[in-house]
Length: 293
Length: 169
Image (cartoon, rainbow over the protein chains, first blue to last red):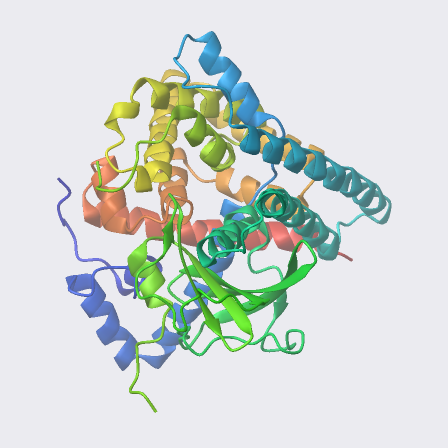
């Protein structure tokens, strides 16, 4: 079990404590809160560290997609005599194959970009972002393709659960593109797509937005990064579904190994909030319920 | 196992987490080839020990811990050649790279001593707190705090220096 041998320096606390994530009862968390209250210059430094951390964290987690990786792993498992429960589910196989194809196209475009970059001696950031956007689009298209296909086959009207689950998939399939959109503070999203007041914002929260699509249906994703490093996206679709609840559920309606999601309807907009983390993170993205007005 | 959650099959784990595990393995090892080996090793170990996955919701964290431990185990075996290779490998991969920003980050990560690199990745990639890192590595909290703090500062410094060197003229 770890023990505390030395008292940490103030600088260590600024670097390592994440308010909102770490236990508020922790003595070091409380000491940091005191430091931030009493020392504005350290508070400013803390904000800067959080900003850099969010940037580095995003970059560390992003990276190139490796085509065919899943198939090679499964082949190795078979070769090593590991019992597999069956072949890759058909839906997944189609999605992986389609995604790989699209990503391969994106990579070809990138190769062309790199050639230009070599001639000029620099790689413009915009090109790199296009590459990331290509990956994001590829992921989105593959996930949503399945959703549309399923809904073309299934004639019954779209249920809130199938809609919410399909849009929630966008979060993980486009996670590489998280935060690469336009800064909300500098540019408004397309007309009619607005943030929900039920989503909690803090001082230092950064919001960017991206345009995606579900088949012919445009989707605006607001990528929200809280100062504590927590990330979530609010997907907004102009769609009315009768069985969507009128307010966001306090507990996520869907959980995967990485994310939690909930959905609701406000006037003509359907919202799907997906966060990276469990129910507690999800709840921190929701504004506390206020008095009815 | 947590109520209401079904034990995933190994195929499902591969489909959902292979790319994430690969990226982590690449950040740790700095080599695409080593990363793929490490990823395959991770899923092989996961398949053999899948009954130890107590909470399917935490499957990703479980897989990343397997990856990290496999990496550390391999490094202990191949420790001798490590230091000399780091600088060369990182620079070569940057030259061959498709994503310049990504590779600059990778060079900066590889420039950290192995222990600091692992801590930094546990912090940034696994989103662990200093307490969780101390528990996982079996190191005193105070030691983690000072080393991780220094490692983060060193990483930023290296990134800034690399970005200055490749800035457009």
